[in-house]
Length: 236
Image (tube, rainbow, N blue to C red; front, side, top):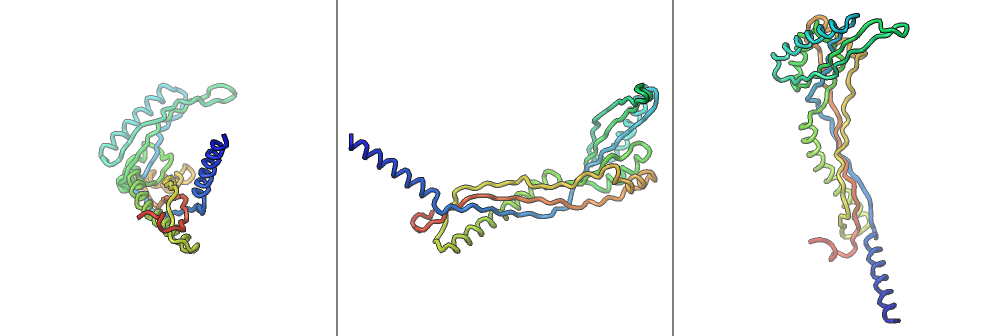
């Protein structure tokens, strides 16, 4: 019985030593790489809207006007378009329906800013600009993140080496590592109140002046290293 207890005690002690060694000289650190990237895509939201007392007639007018806008788009193959959010809304006065408002939303997407500018001028009398937003395309974000990932990992390794040297240890081993690529901060859409200059251009049938700007993309690497005192424990 004593022999069994002795073996059990030795077994538990060895596991405690292993557990302590696994957490010995563990250091957590992170590194971030980020950059400003010129926006390469424009999203425009248009609205065809009519108000009046006859909902059926308003619906016909909106459908006809929407068809005109879509017909104009045929001349711009580099602009993607889709219709969304068709809405018929009653307007109340004194708790009674006094009129109706019918709205059809058209979403546009393109990397050709010149074409988008010209189109917004061409449809001056057909639709209103509800919002404009410059952003990075999915492919641009992915390519940028891949580049930043390499940079962030190198920064992590440089920090780990510096810590190892400052503690006077011959090396370190990587315990764990995670890569966070979720840091992308798109510019907010320019809403109705910010579109006065664009509206003035549209009303005059002139191309709309567009400034793409840029967005910030960043990648953060987080992980833990263990300082190693015995060079024989380092990987070859």
